[in-house]
Image 1 (cartoon, helix red, strand yellow):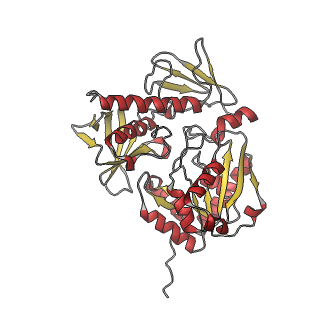
Image 2: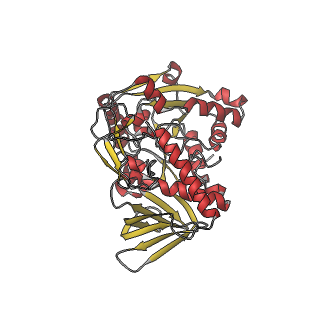
Length: 417
């Protein structure tokens, strides 16, 4: 019998550097674990399924596990040659974002069959407000297929420590709670639907409510830095991408609506006037609903103008889906039937229709990543904090109206309403 070829092998030096480096990292930032005895005793192969908040989640949660785990990561992270070298050394498994990727399933099965453990974030993306997002039901079928134990680390306080929209870490309290959710024996008798319900309940975490109860202080003077990546609509005047942030405060350039973020991450007005939301979760879900509703109405009324625009953005391109090259600056406009990329440094207009557009979402450093036909595009805003998220939400509303359900992001909470 032919021996199965080893895939996603690790580089011992890079692996040791990551494991021991992040043990020191966790100690320095006072990140604690609560781990049940059955997790401590668990031997590979097993499946690790966790909630997903920050950029460092795989390393922070992975280094506490009893054995090394290979994580699945978006292929967008592999486009930087230096990061790609590091991820390859860790045995990271790449996956195309928002695309049914049968290869990644085969790769996960192969890694498990080799006796190695695999880590997956079922939400598919780092969440924006600390509340666990909807997951694709297909994760339950994968669990059933693999038939290995499932460990569920739930990170609490991570959205205070490493929010997706900030570029810097904050010293605070983080606890990672590990449980053995399923044994291999459990999975034999459970249906995919039962598995999905149990997994959803196990990973459920609301950072806002957790923080209301725990009142953990955030030791930082940049608590508002780049929060406009996540909060892109002003609740006072409804302007899009109008916020500018400084230190612990952010203000709307259109109407002057101002917010201070206190040491517990809650919002308060700096000046007089109504406080629409005292936390990021409620604001985030309000603006998501508003963007979906407004764009749907524009689509139904065949609106001819552009919905919004990002001016003087930096544009990168690759026709190989790996190495990207900067190709200029452009103004991006969203219409109900297309995206226009109008270059400002030369006479060139790129038009993308929504049938050939495969994915569009924020990725590494919250840059806008676009996969169109067989081309990869990256767009970086003209200033820190320009929201790429608004593009994903708006385009999902259009795709839904066009009947392209297979392209919808499963983690946009209100698409099914």
